[in-house]
Length: 333
Figure 1 (cartoon, rainbow, N blue to C red):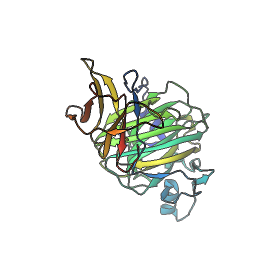
Figure 2: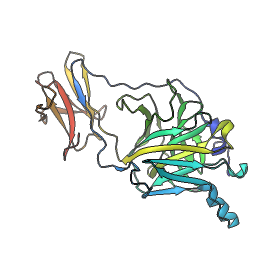
Figure 3: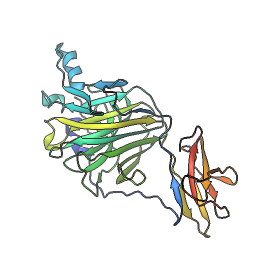
Figure 4: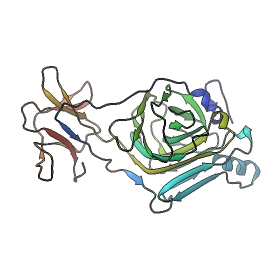
């Protein structure tokens, strides 16, 4: 496999990871107010409850290479759907010259702007595996796969976001050491978003999908579109060993769900804002109370653009509404 001074093959990809302090995310909200955020809409999704991986393309790079060079068909990877979860396993490499074992499974949908998510369910914390999401993927195969990989590194408990080029990783961001140690079996939501050259990877606890445990943001314009999916490969002292991780609840769409933010302005005004692109097709609604009898009303007047932040805002100072949400045409919040 090819190595240059700028590119390291996967078996050496640990060297592309540099440690950095964790980044915490938060939503600023005024006291006494409430936000109701929408779920992903118009996404391709798979909860694996149907017992198969239809719609996925399993990728076994070492098997492909061995077959192309020797004619022998020697599977290296295992793709298992069981109990509503998707387990990807890579056998230890049969030859270190081929790089470490690695396993991918890709969707067929192609996106330019994208938002992909999955729940990382299980792994072996005693070994060092990188596992997570790949976006804008293309030309899958030995020495050809490209894309952006956002992964959790087990055993060392950090996140990284790298550019994959010809199956080699190129460093584009400092990694992020997690402020807590992730626990196998508990489940964590991982997301990767691409909006133009801007890339954002986040990890959440499943009981709080509004505030990430940590995130990585970076700008890289090398790839403008591609497919998405899941990836696992071993690193560090485990590099010649196996790769193994279990996922659930994969979803892909062309934009992140819009989040409304409520804050107090410089003059005490109550401002509700949300991103323009992500909020396309959504309507701001307000209510004076919460509960089964709440009357949600569309808010269409006095909404203004903020060109500096590519967002829209509503001044709620003079309104009777205390609670706000974004509602998608068709009824999804």
